[in-house]
Amino acid sequence: MATVYRYSELRPGQLARRLELYPVAIAPWGALEWHGPHLPFGLDGLVAEAFSEKLAAQTGAILLPTAYLPVTSLPHPQSISIRSENVRGVLRDLLEGLQGAGFRLICLVSGHYAQGHELIVAEAAEAQTRSGGPPVLAGTPLALLGEPELLDHAGRWEASQLLALRPELVDLGLLGEGALPPPAQSAVLGEDPRGATAEQGEAILQRALAAWASWMEQLISTTDPSALYKLYAERRAAYQTYVERYFRGSWEAAIQAWWLERTG
Image 1 (cartoon, rainbow, N blue to C red):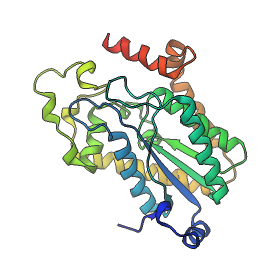
Image 2: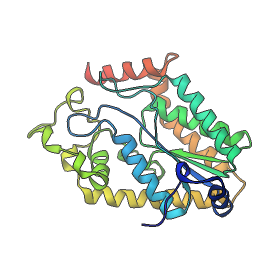
Image 3: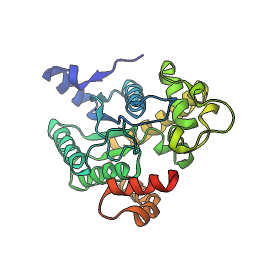
C-alpha cells in the first residue's frame, strides 16, 4: 500500500512539503450508532476511516483522525448523538482551521448519513466554499456514485462494505433464519444484509474510490465551484420530503418522529 500521510504524525516541515505537492485534506466522520445485532456500533466511522485511508494512499492527500461526532444517530439507548449546534460549530472550526493551515481542497467523508447529519455537513461544506475558502467535497463513501439505493442502514450494502474491510466484526448469523426481523429489532432499512458479501463490498468501494478521486482531481484543478453547488442542491432536494414531513425546528425531534413511524 502506498504511503498514507497522517496530519497527526507529520512535523511542521513535513506538512509544509506535502502541502506544496498536494494541498488536500481528507477528514473521515463517524458515529457510535446502533446497527442491529449483527454489526458494530462504530460501523460508520470504521468504514469512513478505512475508505479515507485508501483514498489518501491513492491520491497523496493528508488524512485527518476520524471524528465520531454524529447528529441524529438512530434512536436507541446505546446510540450516541451530538447536538446539532455543537456539530455545526465543530465543522465550522475544522474547515476554517484547515483553510488557515494552507489546504486548497477539503474532503469530508461521512460514514454516518442520517438525514439531519447529511444536511448539516452539506450546509457547512457549501458555506465554507461560498465564503471564498477552499472548496469542500462532502458526502458518504458511496454518495458520489449517484445510486441512492446503496445508502441503506445495517442492510446489504453497509454489511458488504464492512465485510470487505473488517469481516471479523460482522455476524450475520445473529439475524437468524426466515423472515428478517423488523427494523425495531434489526435496525435494517434496505435490503436483507444476509445477502451481503465481501466481494460485493470490495467492488462497490473500488467504484466509490474512483468517483472520489475523479472529483478531487477536478476540484483541485479549477477555481469554478459550480459542480459542488449543484451537488449540494441535489442533496437538499433528495431530503426535501423528509424536511417537510418531520422537521419542526429540531433535527433531533425529526428523527424521533421518522423512526417512530417505522417502528411504532
